[in-house]
Length: 127
Image (cartoon, rainbow, N blue to C red; front, top):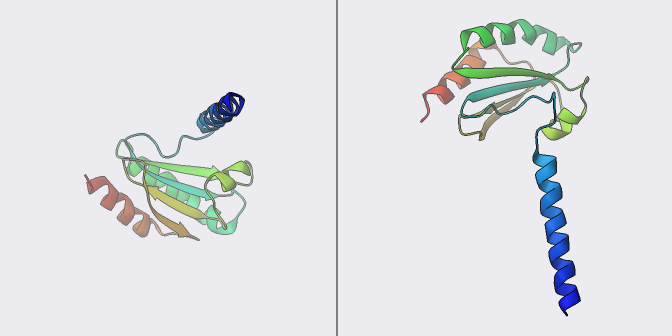
């Protein structure tokens, strides 16, 4: 009985240890969501047509929302693990997080600057 008790606790210890290691940020991997900041991540590829159309929009939004929200692009063709990490099924996909790190909205496909701004503004105003 004591042997089973010790074995059970060893398994629990290993599971907790492995899960804490896998939750640690990988060097070079973008930190998403950004701590205490409204975050919009666009998951796409530099060579996908709708993603190419969104690229200048994302650059403009990065400048417009500097200091108020994080706008991040991740190329899931360059780093395929990111598709799994964010559970995406098509590109581009935009995911919006509130300043507490909670995912609040997800959109698939091209997304206009006006629509992205609407979500960013709503999330910035939220307490």
